[in-house]
Image 1 (tube, rainbow, N blue to C red):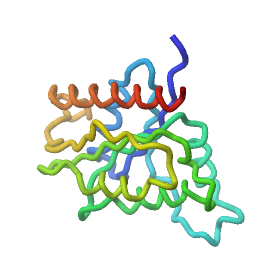
Image 2: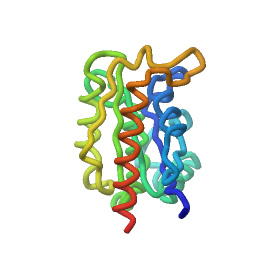
Image 3: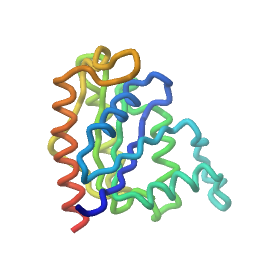
Image 4: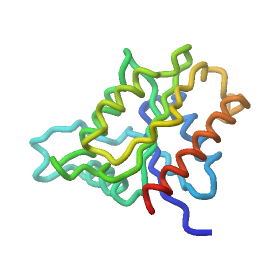
Length: 185
């Protein structure tokens, strides 16, 4: 078998018990052999300020380098007020600069939104689909994945217990692995 593709999984929430973090960790455990998922939280990313671009902070540099070394990016995000969380938008702004040198360029992108409510974060996913073109590589269009009702999908240790969700995640990972493979041929 060849070396697995290194995929940075960006968790769109910084809450300690975030459903997005639990989903990202479940994805990492369920990943097929073709993918190695690196779950990445945004707790240490400072606010973007273009004035700092001449001498970017170390956290920006480290985040950008991690993305540049990856073979793809998978966003796992909740929905806040019909959009993505501010920390996720900030991280995208940090990684997409300096202008014309986005760390997402050429990287296959996947989007997994989630919510304990009935809509599954569809508005957040659509926001990412609006933000990323022009600063990223190709975005996996099908299958789309909007995880609803995730509030009862995990046990008290954060382990995925909802079998139907596990099936959906495995199917998505299979499609994403094939998408990444196709982009790297």
